[in-house]
Length: 424
Length: 136
Image (cartoon, rainbow over all chains, first blue to last red; front, side):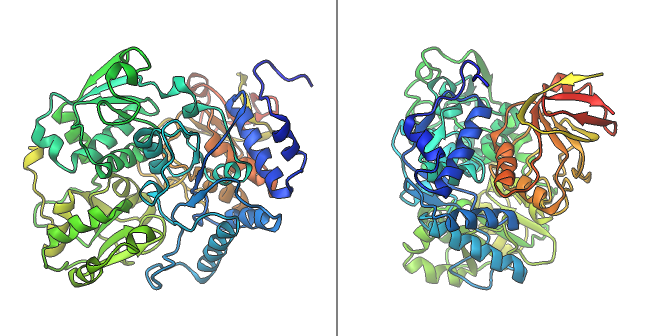
């Protein structure tokens, strides 16, 4: 059958891989990459510099069988590849309550991905664990928060890769030339103007996940250029914004004018012209978005049952901020702080201080992807827009949203304590 | 009423239509063992995808949705077919991996939201490998 115009064109090298030159695993991986490229309408594949794999989280036995098939066929990643979270805390036993079957299968999955040559980073914040591709480099990343950070803050180029396509790209060393790999798709399509907001609100930590939740709900896959944020806004705040936008919606790239690498000014972010449409953010819009991050309305002083922070995984700076807020006090409710081994390895005095504060450090995984929270229901407080989004559907528990300071004060009191002044 | 969809993963299927107008993420929104929609914000909350020709006006969120579709296929709880308003490689890859594991694929077709609106939930339809959707 003749190929239609604009059909995928493969290089001789890629065809040789499809013919089995490099073994059965790479052939299978290239077939999935090429089929995905065809259905996406890609004209060619692009060589990639690195990969970040989200498919290593156990969802059921099918994913394990696929990974083990690639191992059995001699599969090895072709580019440096990090792993996202799994279903187990491989450093601290006893946190995760999976059935014996599920725990054994999750172990098999972890071993399989490591056997494929992936770095056992086990974090959803690989960009804070030394995996930082450069501006303009093509990569294949999974995990929605990592994808949006990679595109937006690092300026490297990844489409939104689902489970399995991520490891297939890593094995093949290629990705479909579609979506955010292409210049035109990276241009901002809408200006999101925050300049009418009070500086006090923009300085509030919760502003970032809340703005992210608004972007995700209202913009879908559009590429926003945000104006009015401070030029020195931290990576941790952009991480929180992106994670919320990518879980409540499908945002894969945002620009912060004057801060992120493809947005020195609004016209550059727009690809030469300022975006055609403009939205001015009002406090009422943000209050509405903020209310969607809680699934139960609690009054000041109502009891809370647990606190969970660290989605995406906490940086060392975020752990230090939490400890400073505890100030030697101790939590009255279970308090889970999720992070990666890159941070665990960097802890020194913080380790004892966290123990004294009653904080449970969770590594390699987090509380919404595997059973860690106490079996009884109740209300979990968080400062993460992503935890807020997934808590109820994934764990059945209600969630209430606040800043990190609110979370710590509420944990110490065992009751909801929120400083609302920036939002009134 | 006969509709023509664009096959992303071609295959024949039949089943009752389940039309979902609000965005749905399979990960965090669908139980991979039972096929039940667990996302409380979904207009299909509590319904089961298994065996249905599921029309999705919008997908959203997690890149883990490919895993959920594969696990639904392995568990025998997969939709009969998926009709998506936009091309979505994340779901399609779940079906491609099922093929590599010698499991049945779930046909995935692109059908505009306007055409999806012409489908009636609960009505039995047949989907052909070349993308024709017709009442049974």
